[in-house]
Amino acid sequence: MKKHYDKALIATYLQQTKYESIMSGLLEHLFVADYKKSEFVTMPLQQIHLFQIIVQGTVSIYFIRDDGSVYSLAYGRKNDLLGEMEIFPHQPGNVYAEANDDVICLALSIESSKNALLENCRFLQLVCESLTQKMESITTLDAAPASLKQRVLIYMKYKCKGELKGLQQAAFHLNCSARQLQRILNQHEAEGIVVKTGKGAYKLVISALHKADFLSVN
Image: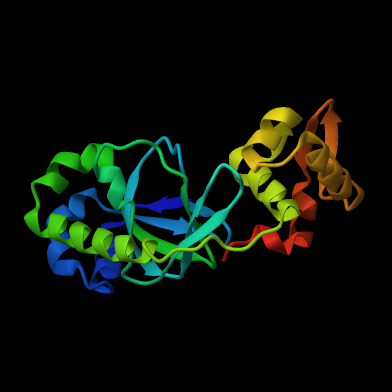
């Protein structure tokens, strides 16, 4: 992510959204966040929590369970909001937003702007409306169908930061036996998608990820 603080640029982008009248009072807190394709716009355990308005581009928003099951939550586009839940205290979730193409957002730091946000009645109404729409979508969710072979790679990519260590623990999360998991890892190793780094340890080969189209949840 690249950040831009030019006030004229921020004002120009804000005019391109439908929230200018609501967000104009928070103009001093805003900056432009520029994301490249496949970059995470939001992800669990971020050190800095942002509230963002999509100005250009699209993002895929999805939830990943510990067993590698993927639930597609939404397809974010211009004027959609990200980071509403971060305004209120809650346990870290498993929701990711990934750029489908180059994405530009107007963003603000929730921590440094929190008092201003909570004192802005129109902003809170906006947040409630957005969260209600997302909750309506979540109630109709089904997990995207995925084989165990697919779920292993999703689990490695999103839950293990690309490196799996310990077959028994991983097999427990994936709801399979250690023998099944070992067989699948051997297949991925033969295909050049993972490499063995030690006993019960495997690492995703970044240059080979494009071969595994099923890693994409877009």
